[in-house]
Length: 297
Image (tube, rainbow, N blue to C red):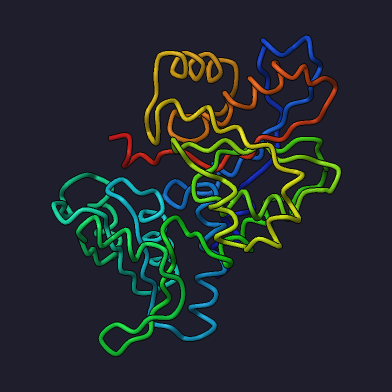
């Protein structure tokens, strides 16, 4: 799996600016995991790394995983399985869909993913299935939706352990909680992690506890700052305030944020720094990737 090592080496840390915070004298940095790959975007390769390694180490036939019609996780999994020469089955929420419903699903199929379109209620009952399953006499690894399992957490820890420097605050968008758990378990004890859920009504504590258990959650709880008011109406929803912020921010920097994940997290971070009058601190924003060209088309 040298291709994963090669991809991860593309990431880097660089400084960025936001003029409205200039008077607070905070040093702002971004971890550019968005540079890793066009389709295995950002934190996706982190969450897949040890799941794929498990498959290879145990000579499994391939992977089964889960996602919605526009899932970045399905796309990343399809691309990664192709590079790893593993079979892959993508179970998609919505039995009214087909491979030609959108460019993301078409691309998944073109990469070799066998798509199964499931009734929505049934999908919700199996989307967190984690571990070994047998299909037609072959052994597969079932990876939950979004890559949310302990193998995924282990890969996300490396976002922090590969850094050469420490920071006072770390921040990222929160979806399945996999990446935020890995980061929370890896940052210095003196630091705090700001997470910005992109789903409306999302309970970060419950979701994180479901992955690592109550005892492990208690070890990181005091370092967490959960900003759950910046979902802008729910997953993939936006408004003029967020759109204008993203346009303004992107105009000031050499990298881009978008309205589904990173834009909401960055808006929440800037609001937090300004409203709490955070001064003279080092802050790292973890860019977990964005929408692929298949989402944008």
